[in-house]
Length: 305
Image 1 (cartoon, helix red, strand yellow):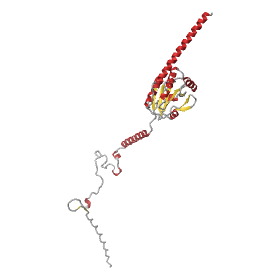
Image 2 (cartoon, one colour):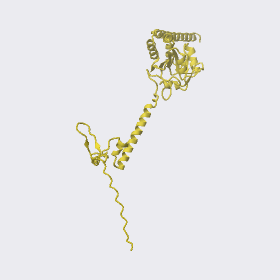
Image 3 (tube, helix red, strand yellow):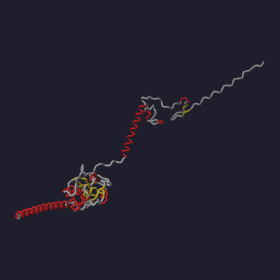
Image 4 (cartoon, helix red, strand yellow):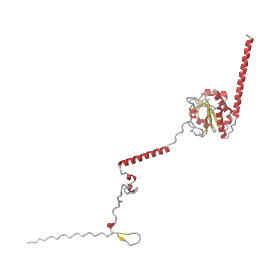
């Protein structure tokens, strides 16, 4: 009989060699110390923290893309924060627009010391001879600026006095380059008659729609014109914008002429007063002559029935 022999078992695999212990160099005095690799810290994550004391979970601000929103622990709180941020952004945007937007134009009539945009100011008016013009054109044609004295109605007593005061002071008032104009809502025909009758050396402006009169603040409500004076220089600076009587409006302009270095003495007013006195004397004399003539006629009628 054949004897069956068992096949020998394979030899066992060799055991893996143990890793060599890592050595770590330490700074400072002393020798190198061998620190086993298994003793080195394996977890680089931050230690757990108490959420009540550290809502950021120990993560420093900005680390790993974490921002202050890491403090939000509730969905409702997140919505509140988002709404607050959005509101602040809208507020900031509105503030930026307000600061960059141009300032709104000043409303209402100008005052002494203000600067106005001459172009388009007061619309279009007409001279007594029928020529269309604007304030900007009149200022451009002047040497130093213009004087506008306003009056309610041509050929009335107060307006006649005012126009004649400016007439009699015309030379000293225009010595520094100011141009003088009368301004009313009268028609060109009425103002031409007024100018011719009083021998006025300056043009009269007809503002029948009262656009310029309103722009300088001399329009009465609901209608009518306030007596006053408006003076503006070449740059658009308002030197005067005042209501006043006939003599007061002339005095305002005289004060401006003095400021500009001109000689605006009272010669014009004195001349106007002399003329007024003479006219009053002539009127009294004419009245006496008329009465005497009437008496003579009456006596003659009695003698010759």
